[in-house]
Image (cartoon, rainbow, N blue to C red; front, side):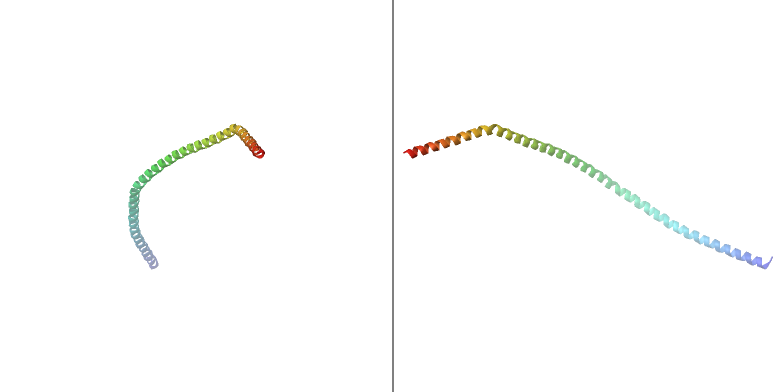
Length: 137
């Protein structure tokens, strides 16, 4: 064989050997990184499971609190309805009192004016009569 060909074959075999060694190193490092990644994934899975377990009581308590808030809101709504009914009752009562006052004034106004007029006339007449009596004496 030709010496040049033998040199090229040796160089090619050296390059192939270097490539194989590089690939082996990359494979070993990749295996280490994949192992680390697997450990991290396992830790994350464990953390997620712990968070999930710790969230169950929180979710249950939140549900109970929401039920209590809903009950309180229902009681508040009922109280507001009762207050609304009471307010409407007071409004109706005030309107009735106002109407009664108007009706009373309308009925009593004319007779009161007549009585006041009669009293004024009587007092004026009595005053004139007394002045006349005292003036003649």
